[in-house]
Amino acid sequence: MPFALPRVSAAARRRAERLLAALRRDYPGAVCELHYTGPHELLVATILSAQSTDAGVNKATPALFAAFPSPAHLAGATPEQIEPYIRTIGLYRNKARSIHEAMKGVMERFGGQVPRTMEELLTLRGVARKTAGVVLSNCFGVHAGVVVDTHVHRLAQRLGLVARGASVAKTERALMALFPRPAWGDLSHMLIWHGRRACKARGSACADQAICAEFGARCELRTPGGRGAGGIVPAQTSGDRSTRTSVQLRIKGAPAKAAKRAAARGEKSNKDQAKRARQESNL
Image (tube, rainbow, N blue to C red; front, side, top):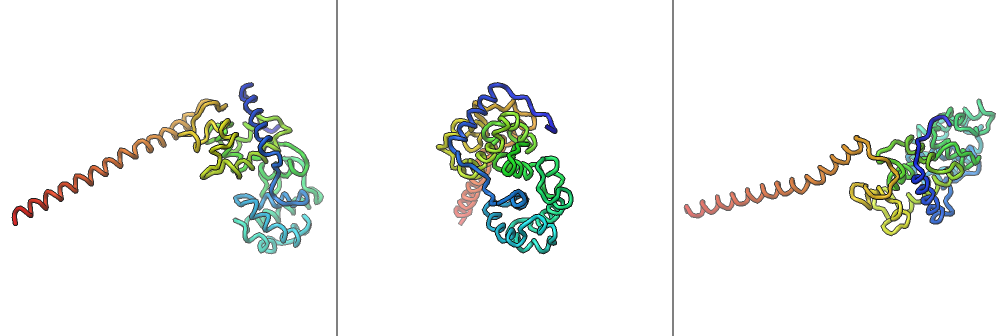
C-alpha cells in the first residue's frame, strides 16, 4: 500500500458491513457499464469517460475499435486520425492525444499488453488512479484501490462515510479502510448504480429508498444542512463548520432582507399616496 489508511472504529466497520449488505441486496447485478472486450478497450473507454457519460462513450467506441482494433493500431495512428471517431465526446482532442500516447506506452514499455499493476498503469498518459482501478478490478480481478467517480464521491458523503467536502483521495482511503479489499470492486459498481438510479445529484429519487432511509445520515436532500444521526464521520473540521455556518446565515438572513425590502416598498407607496392626497386637496 503506497499510503497509510485512516483508523476507523469497530462501530464504523459494522455500519459499513450493513451498508455493503444493503447494496448487495438492492444491486446484485451491478457491473461496469462501459462496453469492452479486453483490457486495452476498457482502458481506452475509461479515458474517454472522464467528464462524459458511459452511454455517450458506448455510442462512440464501436466505430473506434473497429477502425483501431488493437493497441498497435492506436499507437500507429495519429491523434488527428483518432479524433473523428470520438468527436461526440467532450474534450475529444485531449483524449485522442491521451489514447495515442497511452497505447504507445503499452507497445513500447509493456510489450503490447496492458500492465497489471497500479504503479505501471499510472505511468501511461491520461491514466490516474480511477482509470487504473477500473481496468485492474474489471479485467484482472486486482483490487488496488476503490474507484471513486463523481457518484461514489457524492454518495460517500451523503451516506456518512466521509466528512462533507472530503477530497477524492481522502474518500478513497476512507472507503479502503472501511470495507474489505475483496469488496472494493463491487462496492464501486453498486454505489455508482445507486447514484445513477436513486440518489442522483439533483432531484433525488430516493425519498422511499431503503438504503437512503437507513444510511443517509448526511444527505442534504433528506436532512437540512446535511446533518443527521448515525453517521460514522468524525466531528466536522473548522473549515466545514465555517462553510455550513455561512450557508445557514445566508439562509436565515434571506427572509429578513426580503422583509426589509418589502417594508421599504410599502413606506414609499404610503409616501406617494400622501403626496397625491395633498396635491388633490390643493386643487
